[in-house]
Length: 287
Image (tube, rainbow, N blue to C red):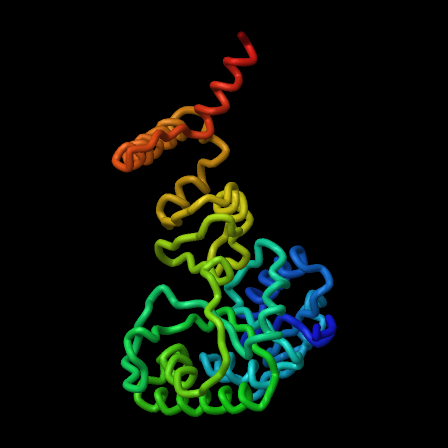
């Protein structure tokens, strides 16, 4: 049974002006990709929240810590919630995520940093999930999980007040018995280090702080082959993508293609770049 649009929504937790501004920018990307979705923010001063948010709800008490996220999720106004950290950017419509909640109670993606603080209850093969993008369906089991997650997080904060929320999330999810699903990285594409996008899959949600979000769409989803993301290379191409056809940009492009061509030769295959194929087509037309 499909939930109505009003029962589904995007939720942010934003304690303080800085995070409210960041959440606003993220919400603008959501609105551009999914114009009809309901967007809610929980913040310490709802009156300051702009109209990009359909629901402006009080977050009390505000700790300006990871606890705010857990509290906001546990009080979500939606039956089906897609929680987004404020430093996310939605590149394309990802409303298909809500379909997962017809079968699963919770979904999140693996964190690239697989194991953080030690969790005795979990085997190494049950690594951390990143809590910056969480999909949940309201119900008794999820409510109980949120309560146990908050208790476990507070207990860990007794020894380290700055500790993150993912170790406690990992522990309590393992113990919970929830029916959950691991999202592909395309739905929580972390950008602080190298990452990988699978073939035939567009990156839908970027997670990291950048000034040039829109350029990710052009460079990450320009084709849907296997893609590997390296922050330093992205920064170069982001700054020079308009000049890749000439000068130093062309030299870098050809150098990278030489590396790819060498890898193809090792596999006994032939490689032709996009620009080489286009040049061949042009020559054939001129004949």
